[in-house]
Length: 221
Image (cartoon, rainbow, N blue to C red; front, side):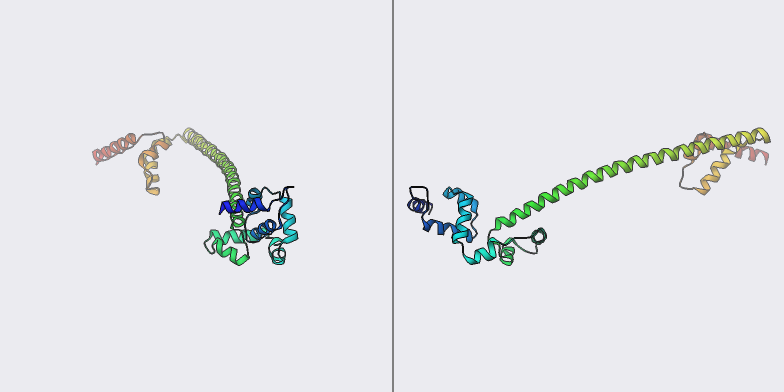
């Protein structure tokens, strides 16, 4: 088949580089049947202007009115690509529905929108990364501020206790064990060791204090 085409090409090409009308009509027919122009240009050594001129001069009325001049908006292309990607239509069904002869045109649209989606995803990822970094920075500042407030409150309470002990002649810190017990009752999920640390004491000191107190009570009774 290839050999016959080559023989046909050789017979229909004239010495001065011009082409026989039979070859021109064959090329026009191939294009109207959906054959890619680029392949025909390479096969016959043609320039784009030659094919454009032949299609203008020898193309059928149907081709000129319904195919050559037909264009698709970006919305139409996106709708077609979406239908294919979602499995609602095949490429062949799209060709039949929209009168598209060349399936490569549809594949080009699919690739085009895939590249656009990839670029959009990459851009969104960069924006989200920046926002996440910004949010993390804001959260860190908020935590630092809350920690400073907590430390300031502790210092204020310690100062209040010191003044009370000095002016009222009371050793308020001696009741730390009772404070641990009361806090434990109000917050049963918090461990004794953690509560003791709030008063600068150890868990061992807590139980030792309780044991000593219970022993004194038993002796007195």
